[in-house]
Length: 198
Image (cartoon, rainbow, N blue to C red):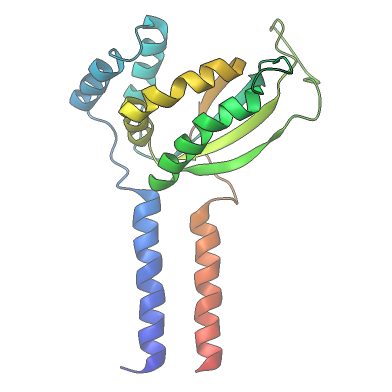
């Protein structure tokens, strides 16, 4: 086997392994899984409305990835208090670390440039502090993160920092930020580099 063949095989294997990890098995949640997750969720959240929404979200699972659209409004803090952004960071740092290990990641995150320029049928929802789009590999990954005991430890920081928030799941979805495309392009460039060098 030539050096070129070996290098191309390594690049192909590494990309295949990345694809499998990033994509996951894409197996929808079963009814038994849903009931098991709900019983665990009830131990950390007794809000029946929230639990019903999560049940519906799990019941419509396709096994594929989705994006959560988050609108955040930070609380106003006094000069002698810890800024809400610092408090929220205590939540975000741990949450994003666990998210990345499950092939999830932010797609877009930024501070808003002004109040909502279009607002229908809503009251007092024109002002937001920041917006984030977060990619999750699967609904199973999201629920596993929520029932993780660490989540109970860090979630109070989020509650303490936010005045209000909206989180809306979007699926199916497609974006040029999909890491399979980006890593795929890197793999193609690596292949071309190997072919040119050898």
